[in-house]
Image 1 (tube, one colour):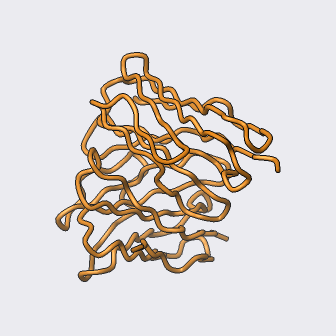
Image 2 (cartoon, each protein chain N blue to C red):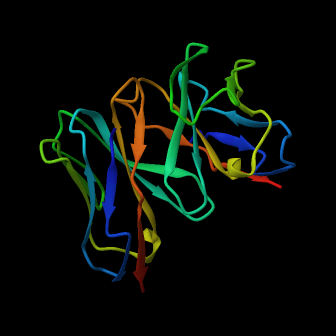
Length: 115
Length: 112
């Protein structure tokens, strides 16, 4: 069964540095998402992306964050000037269609540790 | 603002028992509700998706119901197995284009 893949599985970065998290969604999917889960807390929606633009974003997704689909397969989340509180699991997800009808498929996540 | 609550936070049952996990949400204007399973160190696996017009969905030993008017959903697991041990998350899609709110989860342990 096709999977959403995320790299790296664990990223350690110094505070203030930029980090790029990478995702390869399922090939025929059109909608892409990023979520984060701080240890012991809820999964939080960050952003959704369709047709090469952001379609929805949460209050968390401020100017520090950006997303991009640089080619036909990758979907990236860039975090600029990282802070300690950015430490979390970041999950990428994709769906074939608008989410009211189709379930989202998640990757295994990238654990981001900010030192 | 949508709030999603899951009760209980943790549950431990002997193998073979039937069980019910609960999810409640504050804004009934939802597009759909999805139940996920999360294993330690892993991503989320979609179990069932119920559209706002539906009352329930079934997949194998799992049955999810939705009562929009009361803001509730339940996940029923029949004949539980040790492999069902995981955290179960409820996610509500509402309030805007592709916006989703997750619950806090129920950590289930099925004892052999």
